[in-house]
Image (cartoon, rainbow, N blue to C red; front, side):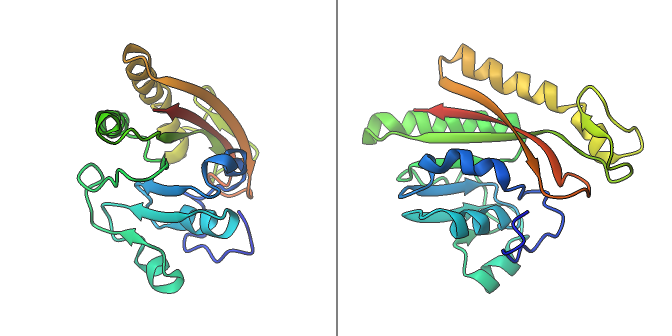
Length: 202
């Protein structure tokens, strides 16, 4: 975690920041929308790291209120993601690990392309491994996990979720690349591990 940024959530459930530097071209001078932004910590990191043309977040909870008040982030809270997609942005980031919603977002963006002739970049993230709160020395993954840890057990379903999004992408002829990056922000639960990304260009 970037210690110079005053994140709201001390354990970075939604803000392991290291890997995002690999996506710099998708952020600098771009209009960026984080769909399902949670507390807004990731938006705060992007705002402090990249010079975006515009940056907004949308989330169906109220978790971002503290960041909105403190850092004046542009976030629509208690808002349905699918009903509030802005179609005039360049990059859409999703770390919600919900294939059905991700697929619907892709369908809506693809449908909108024909009407405005605009290019979209979509980044979909999945947390594929992470440190364990019960034993920081265990490099948890979908193959190796601690049955006593809720996050470790959650990782068991990640492979299935990723197979759903991959089937959708392949069966609908989406152009995409898949990349994995390690991050290391500490030894608490999920502060170190791996994120896997799908980068789709429409």
